[in-house]
Length: 404
Image (cartoon, rainbow, N blue to C red):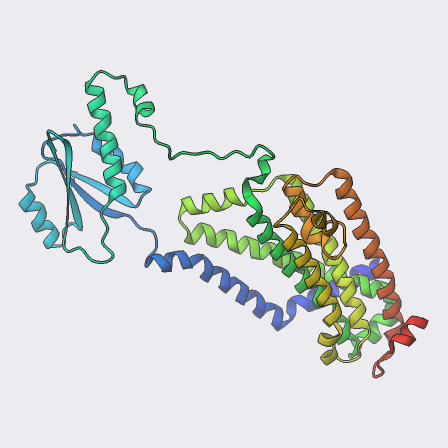
C-alpha cells in the first residue's frame, strides 16, 4: 500500500509541474473569463443603471412614483421625480446634458398620456416601455382605489398571464430538461477522455526514460499501472473542481444577478443525480484510463502513442455518440442498451436517472457490468505492461502479447 501511495504522489507531482498542465489551465480559465464577459460585450457595456427623470407637475401620482425606484432598478433605471420644472426647463437640461432623458406625464379625459423627451433618437435609443408599463399599473391602482376597491384586491384585478410556472407531471427533476443533461454528457466525455489519454502518454514516456528502472526495482508493475491511473485521476478531479469554482466566481462577478439565478436554477440537480454522475465519472475514467494504459504499454516511443490510441479513441467516440443520439428518444430500446454497454453507460445512465427512466435494478446492473469490465481490462493491462516493461527498443508484436 505504501508503494501505491508513493507512485500516486509521484504521478500527481509530475503532472502538476508540467508546463503543458499549467498552460492548459491558464487557457481554460481565460476562455471561461472571456465566455462570461460575452453577454456584456454583446450589449456594448456592463449592466448599469440609466437615470430617467419623470415630470409630474400635476401630482397625478400623489408621491407614489418614488416607490417604483426599487422595482425599476432591476430593469436598469433610476427614477427621479420632478414636480416643479416646466417643459422648457426639462428640455434645456437635456440639451445641456444635465439629465439624459425625461418622461412627461399628463392626464386627460382618455386617461394618462406620455411624452418621452430625449436629445435625438439614434439606432440605440429605445423608449422605456418597461417604465411606462410600471407607471401605468400604478396609475390604474390609484384610480381603482379612488373607486373604493380595497388595496388588497388590486393585484387580482391587474393580474396578467406573465407569471407562468411549469410543473412536470412525470418528475420534478425534469425541469432542467434534456439540454442540460446533454451538456453534462459532453463535459463528462471530454473530462474522461482527456485525463484517461494522459495515462497512456505517462506510461509511454516513463518506459523510454530511466524513471522506470527505479520504479521497477521498488514496486510491482501492477502498482505502477494502478498508481498512474489513480494519480492522474486525482489531478483530473482537482482540475475539474477548480474549473467549476472559477466558472462560478466569474458568473457572479460578470453576469447580472438575475441571469446567475436563472442559470443556477436551470442547472440545479438532485443529490441522487449528483451521486450517480460522480460514480460514473470515476468508473468511466477508470475504464478508459486502463484501456489507454494498455495501449501505452504496447509502444516503445512517444511518437507512436497517438496511432496506438486510435482504437480506444474510436471506442470512446462510439460510446459517446451512442448515448448522445439515444437521448433524442429516451424511451427507445437502444437507450436502454446504451445504459448497459460499458463504453457508453458513463455518458448515458446519468441522463436516464435524471429523467426518471432507470429502475434501481437497471442502475445496479449497469454499474456491476462496468466494474467487471474495469477489472478485466485492468488485469489485461497489467499483464501486458508487465511483459512489455523491459522491451525498451523493441516493439512487441500482438502474437507475442497473446502468448504471455
